[in-house]
Image (cartoon, rainbow, N blue to C red; front, side, top):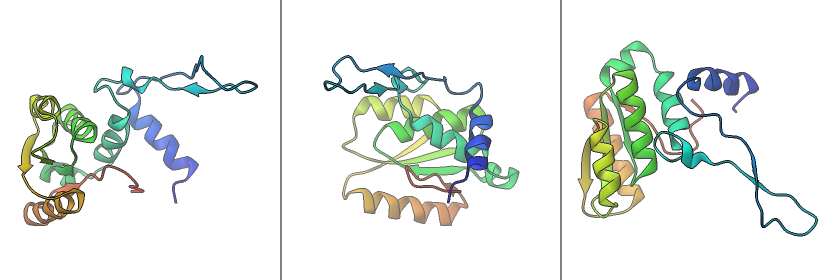
Length: 149
C-alpha cells in the first residue's frame, strides 16, 4: 500500500523534473458543481506518464540503474520512461506494438531509447516479451500502471 511518506518521497524525486500543474476550473461544469482539471499536457513529454516512469527509475539502486530498464507501451509511458532514462543516464528498452503511432516511436527513439517493435499480439504479448527480455538482460521492468515499488 502506498503511504503518505511514499508520496512525499516521490514528490522530492520529481522536484525540478515535472511541472507543478495547478487545478484549472472546467468551464462546462454541471449546474451546482465545479469541476477541475490538471493540464498535464504541459509536462515535458506532454503527458502525466512522466511522473510514474521517472519516480520508478529514480528510485532504483545503483546496480539496477547500471543494468538499465525496460517497459512496454504504445506511447506516453514509452516517452516517459525514455525521457527519465535519458535524464538519469540509464539504458532504456521499450517494447512497442508495430501499429503504435509513428510519432510516438520516433519521439521515444529520439530520447535515446531502444525500441523493439512487435507486429503481433496485444498488451499481454508485449508484457511477456518485455518480461523475457528483462530476465535475459537483467533489466528492471517499469510497468505502465499499478506499480507500488
